[in-house]
Length: 96
Image 1 (tube, rainbow, N blue to C red):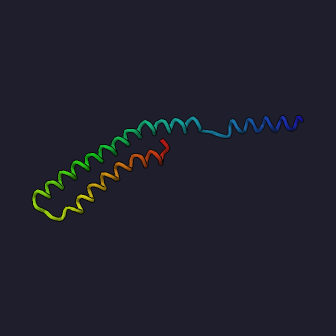
Image 2: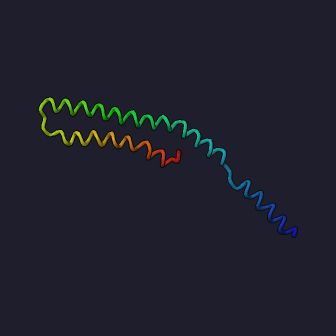
Image 3: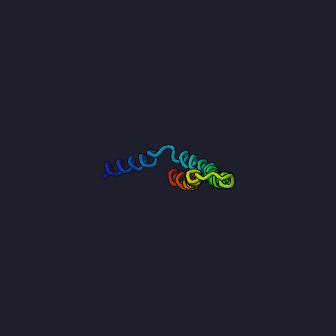
């Protein structure tokens, strides 16, 4: 009985001390989440800028009579679409 009690106490102390750095990891996650929201907002702002700038360039090329604007439309659209998807992807990747 004493043996089981002493083994139980040893296991209990090992469980409590077996996880060093939990507080530091939680602090790092909080720091990352604080700075990550600004990175997510940056992704959204870049997506809007890509969309607006791309739309203006395509409109200008169209008004100048350039016929081959299909690749430009696809390029600017997918650049904006990539930035829109980058924010949620990073949120899922970091678990924030």
